[in-house]
Image (cartoon, rainbow, N blue to C red; front, side, top):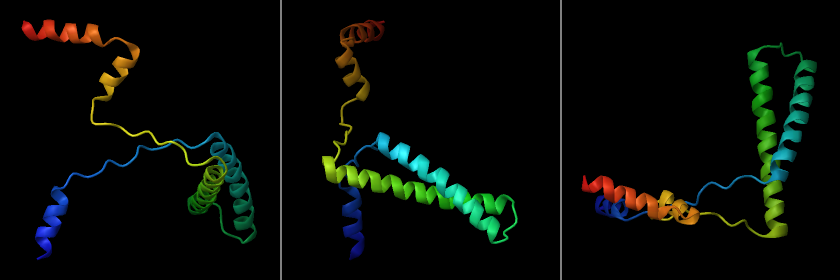
Length: 121
């Protein structure tokens, strides 16, 4: 009984997810600073705890500093969205993106004429 529902759900067209949005400049700056500070403090803390230097400690410092950096970046984006409102997300349409780009540049006509000439040969 659940199989037809799953089959029907899989055959329905899916909505395209929005394209990836780039982080803001503040996100990049603050998350980089947080990464450097967190890595330095974690390195000192683990050294004080007597954890021997090596690949495991370096990986642990990197992962924990990356998590702190990612969290601070998300916090910056969240606060920026609260202050300025949500960012506009560009979505790709069903039409060819190259065609859209050529229309914007104004070079569509030469490309179409060239394709017609090569197709007639």
